[in-house]
Length: 122
Figure 1 (cartoon, one colour):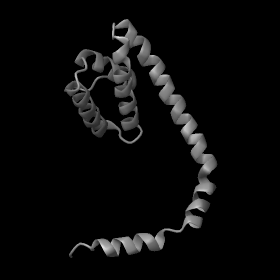
Figure 2 (cartoon, helix red, strand yellow; figure 1 turned 120 degrees about the horizontal axis):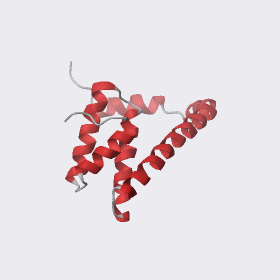
Figure 3 (cartoon, one colour; figure 1 turned 90 degrees about the horizontal axis):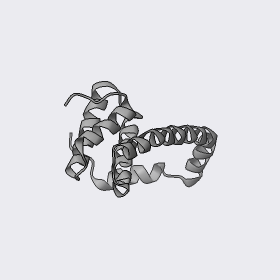
Figure 4 (tube, helix red, strand yellow; figure 1 turned 180 degrees about the vertical axis):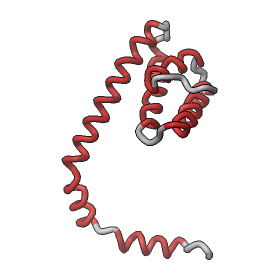
């Protein structure tokens, strides 16, 4: 079966797009979305509050702390979408990305241990 051309996809999308319908749907779930966002922000802050003192204990220069916190944030984000082996693969990819950017592998492993609870075998 051939792929649909762009104009067919656009017409289908534009026929579904109705601002009033979308506004109504968002309004219906706004309270739930706010509650879920508040919970996720609280979890993220708790992780950051665990990681930051560890980084200072390990002697990470202040200018590098945000990079390691970004590692923790990315891993937390992956944890909200994946579990098990898939999560381990995602964590490995995140680690590889940040090691390529020059972060210390042993410190990244410590961040992973804090966020995930263990460092996946590599």
